[in-house]
Amino acid sequence: MAKKFHNFINGEWVDAESGETFENRNPANWNELIGTFPKSDKEDVEHAVEAAVAQRDAWANLPVPKRGQILGRAGDIMVKRKEEIAKLMTREMGKILKETRGDTQEGIDTAYYAFGEARRLYGVTSTSELTNKATYTIIKPIGTAGIISPWNFPMAIPCWKIFPALLMGNTIVFKPASDTPATATKFVEILNEAGVPKGVVNLVHGPGSTVGEAILKHPDIGVISFTGSSAVGRRIAEVAGKNLKRVSLELGGKNPQIVMPDADIELAIEGVLWGAFGTTGQRCTATSRLILHGDIYDEFMDILIKRTKDLRVGDGLLESSDVGPIINESQLKIILNYVDIGKQEGAKLLLGGKRLTGGKYDNGFFMEPTIFTEVEPGMRIEQEEIFGPVLSVIRIFDFEEAIAVANDIEYGLSSSIYTNNILYAMKAIDKLEAGITYINAPTIGAECHMPFGGFKNTGNGHREGGKWPYEVFGEIKTVYIDYSGKLQKAQIDTEITK
Ligand code: NAP
Ligand code: MG
Image (cartoon, rainbow, N blue to C red):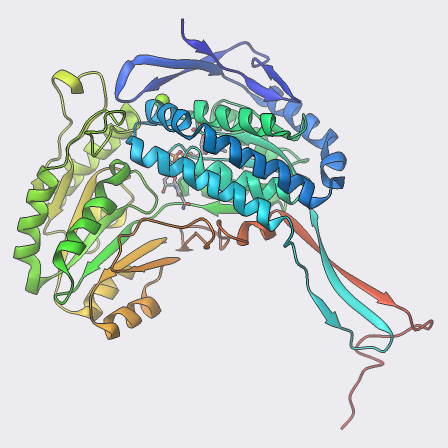
């Protein structure tokens, strides 16, 4: 019998009120049922929010270092369970073990960052413009945060959001992606074991269209932190906008890797292989466009094709696999449809493009690593996020053209340039319209203490990672203390006359 999983509301593991469930299966072997999960709806969200609201004061009144200790303990537990978490994550969403270990490590690093940050929630102290008056800031929790996460980083992304939200003293209603409810459950189990009091973190499984919507619309949820597609992000911004709710959005990407003729070619090839086909291309920061200089084009492509053919596609649980499956059948169809679109647009399908079948592939959603050449700027495969192992190669002839092609896109998450010319590197840092620019490294590889997010339609200006999300989850209060014993008027009493 498959394991039955639950929601976690007010410290209790419970079914959906309706009693309905949904299944979670392994994309490398769809016959393997990982478990059934509550298919919750609005009513379950109501209960979760009630519990979260009831615990607000108690959690917010706990001194911040005490909250930090609990979060640090969660990090300790994750260290002990790293392998178990990684294996579960690979089973439920497919990426190879090396990467699910990395995903878990990012969560651990974020826990320890929160532990340290607990003694570093500095405000601003300044001098007053008036005599016998002091001014400084403090930061208060918002109340209850709604956390909505995608499936491609099932541990790292919830950790990026939930650790800062908790440290800031908020209580949580957490809706993970329907494709990765098991890793989310494990995370909530760990928070509970670490000592997060009941009702502070509430987990509600179920569809975005019901559970997600109910979170967005709930008047007692003061801030929403969302990572996912631009389409859903727009919807969230709309609803949140109507209610003047704070919202942090981390959305799609269409990330370029530029390679100039003076680059270390071997290094640039390793970079594009890892950037384009790591996580089977299902990363917001995946390298989906290779912007390659004409002078090295033939040589580069010869090696790249050979090396791409060598990639071993298979079950992520096997150490021998380099590339795991696609998350589910409908996503595989979307990617294969993009292959058709690319062909119709006149790009040349140089490698791959097909679903893998036969033997070990029959029960999963595997696809060949795919490369299109003769891709022109403006083609749909060059502009739209495919979210699969599909690389579009665009040939350019000078640096300015490379930058123009890289920037001619609605997104602006990550970017990379391989060059040994300091002038190109510095200009690229200046000109690339992206939240992250790598020099001589692929478009993927963010570190937990540095800001992560994008320009343009990749988001709404917030950043995750490091100290940045702490402001998303806090309200700043400015304090003025007047000890002059008289009414002093700012701007009026202080007028400076010439
Ligand atoms: P998605 O379809 O937008 O789903 C993200 C989350 O939103 C899921 O939990 C989903 O629930 C929920 N949701 C769906 N409809 C909703 C609604 N109407 N109201 C509220 N919530 C709703 O994205 P995904 O397919 O999971 O993830 C892939 C996308 O995430 C890509 O576009 C990728 O670029 C982006 N991403 C961005 C970053 C970044 O930091 N910039 C990082 C990783 C991924 P269900 O699962 O139940 O549908
Ligand atoms: Mg699954």
